[in-house]
Length: 240
Image 1 (cartoon, rainbow, N blue to C red):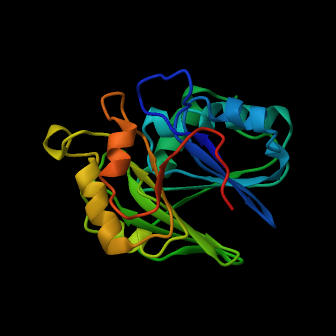
Image 2 (cartoon, rainbow, N blue to C red; image 1 turned 90 degrees about the horizontal axis):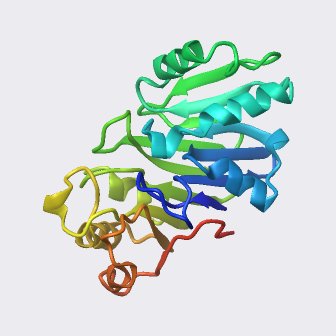
């Protein structure tokens, strides 16, 4: 379920980037942009069942709600460890944030286990998280999360990337940013023509375009995708 499909520009109908994954053994939050916890509360998500958080990168529009999440879990006296997965620099970043907000972002009775994703897929049971470097600051990653026989891919925020088609290849669902009108205007984001080229190579089963800035015309972006199965992502949309 998508909890946020917006950008750094506030929007009345779009929270910051985030998605809630419901697996048999537990739930995961992929990105935690501002407003995603509110969207989760609106959708009735159960914070008690969260196993961990996976960040595509550490920019505020993708990570700011990690702070109130930790505060909420502290208030609930969570006793199970919380897993945090992210790109290079995540451990130092979390330590600095927790230090600045001492003691409110440290769980009383459980640790936050931080692992920085690298070339080898991270695994827990049948859950697999493949990460590849994206063309964007903040330790940015492309992600492919596979579990229970299905795979979801995230572009994260990125410019044109040699790794994106690999991560999205034949994915059941591909969440792809489409932030720009023309590539030359924003080299660290994607424009419709660039997204189309990735889809031509990767051939995902279904793509949801997300992270569109206001100047991007959604219907026009969809038309640029040609024969591929593509829709515009919306907050609280459900898949699977």
